Image (cartoon, rainbow over all chains, first blue to last red; front, side, top):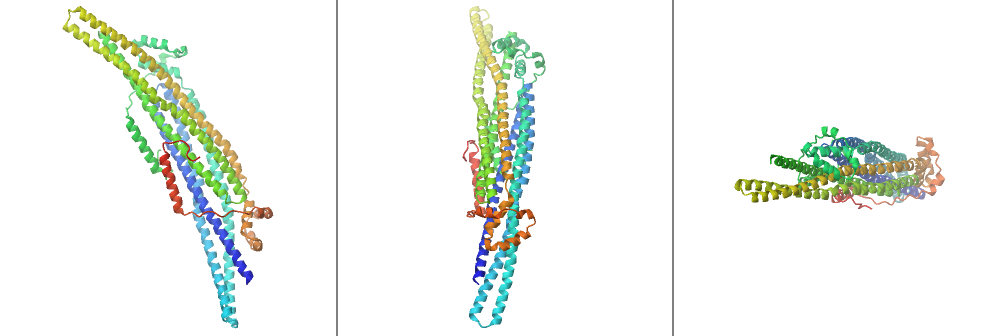
Length: 297
Length: 297
């Protein structure tokens, strides 16, 4: 009797520990899932801003002198390509990090069912035990009734042992799978992030050349040619004589003149409008907060 | 007279072109500044989420078996180090990209002053021209008055020419500086981003090993030992016999037993609380939207 009582206590303790283990995973995987999802969301917001930047660089480049135009356009092309990789990063993080963590919601529920089944079997065993004790006290000589109660207790104990054994197996597998999943999820996170950072280095290396290749002097000649018609050449000469560096007079103004068709028909925009646009932008951010899919494209 | 009139027209046209050039820079540098500032802000928000992730990984690691505990803690250390580099990225982008673009607000204002001075001088010249014409029509024989008006026109023309020449110089320098600044700002942007991406690759390489080194089997032994007291060893054997892989039975359970002190005293948190926390978090985002400094640290 004493031994059986201790056995029940020890098993209760063990079930409580299992419950705690499952609750701990529920709590922390839940929080990790939320924060990773937030991280992915902010990455998507960063991509949105980068997309706006791409569009604005294209718009600005269109108004500029030939070298700036080409250099900025090429930079924007590369930077836009990088945002495609950022989008891939977002999609992969969603699929390989957030989703597997989200699955633990269901996994934890199933483990709770197993725990509940074990607790039910155990409480039935405890009830049969107290039933047997009562029977022994009330009818100490009725061996038939005592024998029946002993039989029922034995059945309940076997049932409790069976479900407990099943629970032990299932919790063991749960723990095993959890460690594997944690390793997988973090390995995937690191791999996905590294893929993006590697691509970023590659793309920025090309983009850097696009900016470095912008010929300042040639563009300056184009600007001057567009500003001063031929009969203003003398005044232009005065301006040039005043410019400090003699290097700046080496640009080919003949070839520049041909490309001097700079579109200056741009829409004037009030500062107020810009502010409104920015507010809209922030509102969008709020609305999109829970959605990591790409709205801008 | 006709020549002088054409000269005025040509110069008016030239001044208009200069005004357009300045307005174009005002518009596009203003928008670039806003979008780059948004990009920096979103990067800071991403760092905030990563900081939350670091804290949660530490909190979870503290509740785990020894190998997971150490592996996750080391990963969080590296990931936290990466956020310091992200903060440096934010600070550098603010100083080397957003600030120089912001400066164009002042630069454009100064150029507008120069343009205004030129326009004033030109309108004075035009006024003197019509004054001279009126004088000639009204007093065609009063050579003294005509001479005086001619003198005044000459002074106004010289003044207009002087301020126009100054404007030409200043706009020439403005254009020169603008091309240089655009090249500098985009080069800085690329360099700062590359520095961060390079560091990220370096840090993730180390972090990957921390995750890969987590010994699943040793931790599983620790988990089992914590769950089953010595008198439950027979039941543990049953569980082990049921586990599929024989490799999982090789862990040293002696050394594991010593480290089995796993803290399971964790706070239970309702899902509702998590949701509230997330809302707070989003509210913070809105409040912080205009502030890229680091609040979390």
